[in-house]
Image 1 (cartoon, rainbow over the protein chains, first blue to last red):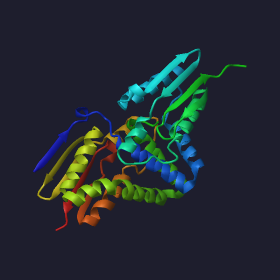
Image 2: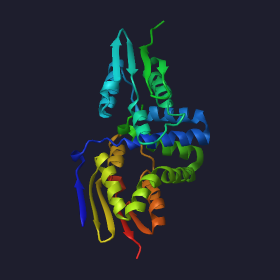
Image 3: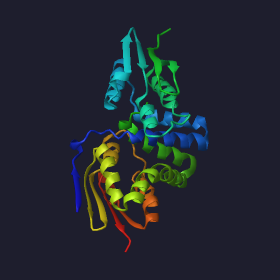
Image 4: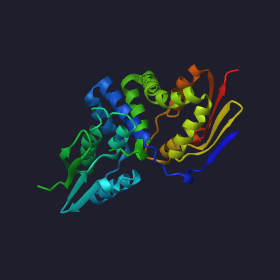
Length: 149
Length: 143
């Protein structure tokens, strides 16, 4: 007889195959309903999952998720004068998917482009995507406080 | 990037989104797609190579990475997962401002059953306590 018993505290919650599952879901939506539906789905997701954040909270959130992915080294942030600048040298999700033999779908970039755009709007920030490399997920973007006119 | 640690929330929202587009039948069609394109190449290949012992190998890795609270046994051709606290459903229940997809746990019934039954395995999934993030899966060789 083989037996395995585990408590939740025995292991770190890090099932990277979920990156593949996520991409399969986005690809299914994109191929079946069109690219605008991918944006619609991610907009629904942002509105259901996230709460309004300050720039400080957003910076901490980003640091937390990259740390959870064991990828703090790919993330650089700078917050000053109401602008949060973010640089990602490579996307750990894309790196994992490729290493496991899964080629990310053409819709995957929306998890940066659309997701952060909608999140910024929800938080009352302006979002500017300066760079996004489809192959590696290398990205540079800014969230800015909206100046009262 | 959606972190893999936040995937479950996006998964539940995906089921809601597809249901909004195509109804429950659309969600089931999606689960079949996932079963064929994600589960079959992983769990299916384990079972093809090792028989019911492949179930043990597959879930030992997956449930450990998901930090599940479970007891898993394989004894005399019967494989059992007694899930004391499912990390996926548990996370959905803990986040009070999110309403999980109404049949969230239904995907576990379909996506694995669809792969395993063609191998001649009997698939029994007890979902009576999924509201408490608990379930019991029994897979056995058809006699």
